[in-house]
Length: 82
Image 1 (spheres, rainbow, N blue to C red):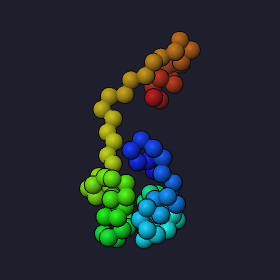
Image 2 (cartoon, rainbow, N blue to C red):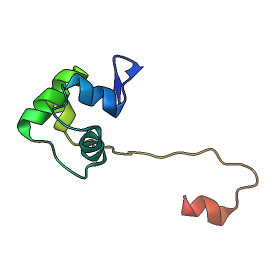
Image 3 (spheres, one colour):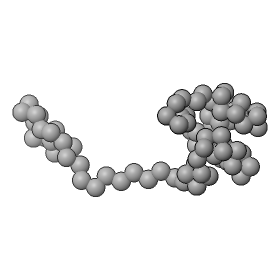
Image 4 (cartoon, one colour):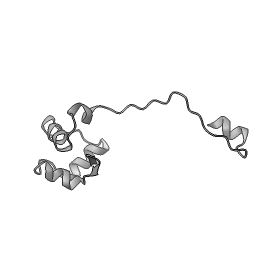
């Protein structure tokens, strides 16, 4: 996890939250294995200096048009698979 361009370990984050949750629990939140309670989400957002909306909003990635550079050695079948 990063904050303000720097790195923040899970233990540091837990410490910044006054031990409200363990580093292991934060890791589970990060991997999507658990959801934090509202009070924990607010504390996480405050410790990371972000909004709770930013913290809890799903990330959506959409690829519109994918282009790639063809190498002379790329076979027609390989290009079709891409």
